[in-house]
Length: 113
Image: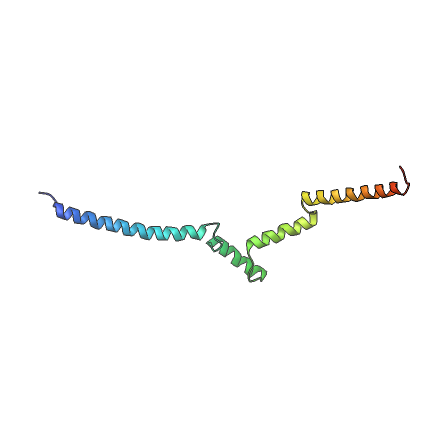
């Protein structure tokens, strides 16, 4: 004698299938929220929100955020050590152009080297 007959076995299979489907939907929803909470591309993730809250509390600036603080820090250091290589190259080219213009002007008035 079998423990379950075919009809009972089918009903149990359907109930287990529906239970697994329901549980996977719930787990999927929870997993999606958990992934979103730590996603670095999400501005409202748990870590970013926590760091921003602590930074705002320490600095007293209500809308303080880490990205803005890094940007401000990099730009203030860049101001101490000069601009980028491209900016320095442009400044050097401008200075050389000015010197060539002075030499040409000097030669045009009869000066020589």
